[in-house]
Image (tube, rainbow, N blue to C red; front, side):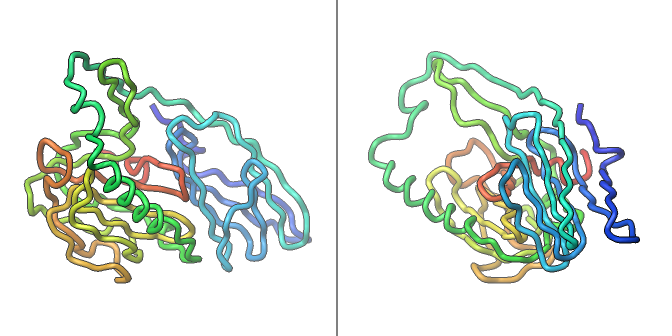
Length: 269
């Protein structure tokens, strides 16, 4: 069960001169969460001593990974130079762990001849996620990018022949090849590659200040790198490309290098 921040919002009030101003956070205080906020223009913000990007009009965002520690400190300086602190305590999550033994070695690790291709794929993805545009598309209420039953969840993990594999960092939507995929929020397309080794057709949409959506296993991309897209715009079609056993959309989200749970940003199914 997830713990909401005072009904999904946490309002931190502090005084600036004779006026009461508000620093607001929106999101869930739990592992894998993305918190979006606003502060008076001209404020500076730090999370655990590290500076947080903030737009000219005071919007900012930060997130916590799958296994993030549970206690954090948010610090900010208002436009008058006053410092403020707030301790944030996250709830821990339990993830589905599946153990499978007796597999052939080629089913556990990729063959040597494809390692360079995988490395090049990773380089392209990292470059696309490196943007730090001072845009605030992330502040929208996100929508589901595709319709269909949920067939995979964030944080789940397989242990193959006793070897823990990388956790699943997305939410899977099962649907036939050709099912429409829509932009979950406004953004800029930073990558589309039709045939990556693991993820097949791969698209990344940047939502500003280091927040991005990644769509995997696509059969077709309908927009190209550099395109500006609007929430609800048709951008791709679901497929079964890459290393998969059936057609589905794997939707992943990042804040910088932090992998967050997309399901925490959309209405529950």
